[in-house]
Image (cartoon, rainbow, N blue to C red; front, side, top):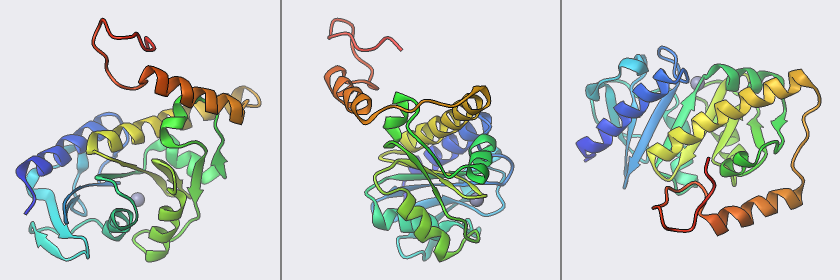
Length: 223
Ligand SMILES: [Zn+2]
């Protein structure tokens, strides 16, 4: 059985992603895994107004074990990601800039050091019909070694070790797509060299970048 906390986390995440403009109406779906149970949004639910009774519980084989509504049509995609990767949450959106990028570009090269939090170059999974096993297979492949990817002519996908992390990754991808779009409009975007990327990773490890630090500890970046 899923805990009420998992359901509440899922509801809060959907409300936040809708407030940030990533989940629009009924488009997109979010899940969180607890052991061998997965809480996933119901198909047709308005995600910005999601309630706990619109959360459906399935096992890792896709059998519905809780909730009275029909799960999202992308439930197979979510389960495929849990089967392949050791992650606790999946966020799929039709966020506007990510979706536009998925239509127009083949990948996003490494153009900003924060992108390394997502694993580097952002791949675009080739198009397949929503809800199909082919789409799940292609998205699983696009996420190899990555925390986010684009789905061609469809939208974005992000995974994380926690639901908060998956939400942050989805937001970071939408930000990156926005920056890359603007950079393309201004000229020819420069990319980070492999050496520059390695230096970022070394500096991040040395400074525990990305984690909140108590004053008095060694100072990290002030961003
Ligand atoms: Zn979709």
